[in-house]
Image 1 (cartoon, protein in one colour):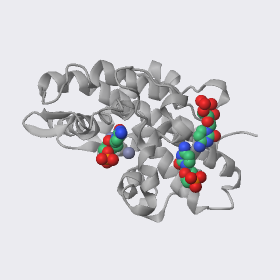
Image 2 (tube, helix red, strand yellow; image 1 turned 135 degrees about the vertical axis):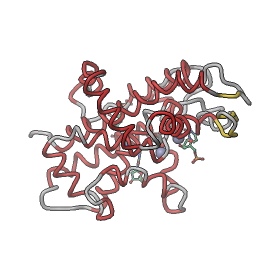
Image 3 (cartoon, rainbow, N blue to C red; image 1 turned 90 degrees about the horizontal axis):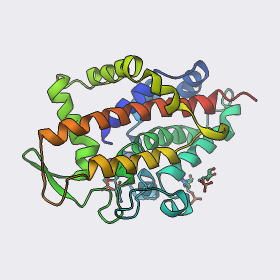
Length: 265
Ligand code: DCM
Ligand code: DCM
Ligand code: DCM
Ligand code: ZN
Ligand code: ZN
């Protein structure tokens, strides 16, 4: 996702934090966040091109083999070096340190929180598990209405931007409020299943990646080739998917952080 998507995921997550999570996150956030996790959720995108952070740039996605439309950890996350592996890794870092949080504020854990929060958003963007051959849609040039772009950017940014203009008076806050209302009144029965994680694991990103490539094949890539002009039909039928993925990302980020910080001995 772009900045708006990541902000939305983290803002939604914050509304589902348990008490201990609120306390722990507040301690770990950098000063610049002013107590708001959402304020720092795009940080991994800001730094990923800097030489000292270049190693993190492959952790934003887990590309899958062309046209297979499925995801497999051992095949698609070699050496744990992908978004799924990064979610496991940063969850483990926060878990192993969470007991000491009351006395020690460790700078690396601040980074771990920001990476985990960002990557939990990215794994829900369907094209972040897109095909290797087109770099998750980055190589597929399309027109978004009359604007030249690529399919990946349509899903990272354009659908959200167009929705903000068309329905939310260009206010991201209003769009987030709408998602919060849908979570409360529309998706309320599904939220529990979104939160659940098998085998008492703190994080279970593998199913999220499988869902994403499934959605990539049935919605993102569907009826799109080089040069396709995407307009109202595509926008209206895909916006529902984007909104649900942002909401799921928020719910699952909160659930994961709640499991990390509220873990009873
Ligand atoms: N790392 C990660 N995701 C993984 C594996 C490792 O983010 N799937 C991180 C942990 C370290 C950093 O990579 O902070 C550098 O690891 P190393 O020095 O072991 O290569
Ligand atoms: N894993 C880990 N540290 C990483 C990446 C992954 O401990 N940096 C572990 C946590 C998961 C497992 O890898 O339990 C996922 O791999 P698999 O599905 O092959 O067990
Ligand atoms: N991306 C991806 N798969 C790739 C390469 C990139 O999903 N193989 C994503 C990461 C960014 C976006 O596409 O969200 C643009 O990538 P970059 O900023 O590295 O050009
Ligand atoms: Zn992206
Ligand atoms: Zn990213």
